[in-house]
Length: 203
Ligand SMILES: Nc1ncnc2c1ncn2[C@@H]1O[C@H](COP(=O)(O)OP(=O)(O)OP(=O)(O)O)[C@@H](O)[C@H]1O
Ligand SMILES: [Mg+2]
Image (cartoon, rainbow, N blue to C red):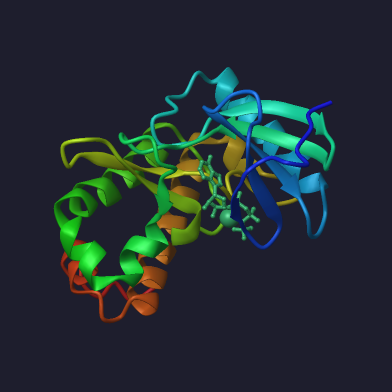
């Protein structure tokens, strides 16, 4: 059993806490702290489908299975770090700050459409896309990418979009459009974002 009692807490969402893996600094362990732990299982099933398809993990934190921990069941993932070794920060934090958006505008301009293309190319279906669940992984030298760390898969009772390619892509595009609209609404005054997002798709 993995002892997490003294493990470093990296982040916390509405449902889970994310700890540094005590034995491997390249990994993190997520513990469900609110709501249903079935969520871990559903997610694990979807990740095994993705692994079986041999997708690229360039913009999705790779899943390494469920483990028993001192805090209950844990889900192990790649820990996303910047080139300087610090844990990558959510896109939300960058977009909330005019200074950070400006300083990273070139990077953001490339990284947003690249994530969309990645999801489509690898047919990675998501639930609601949120900027707190997407990390901006900065390498050294001003380059970087967005990496999705949460809300992957589909909560539909019968997830047809997992089985039928065009349904999957249609769902991904719909989620992406909604994501862009949410970003526009959430960060109304972010000038960098205004330039990046295609103007005024009302949907
Ligand atoms: N693979 C990762 N690498 C680095 N940091 C991570 C990783 N996964 C999660 N985090 C950090 O931990 C936070 C919480 O993790 P996560 O989003 O999985 O929790 P959650 O409770 O499921 O979130 P939500 O509130 O969206 O349901 C994230 O917002 C992020 O800052
Ligand atoms: Mg989250």
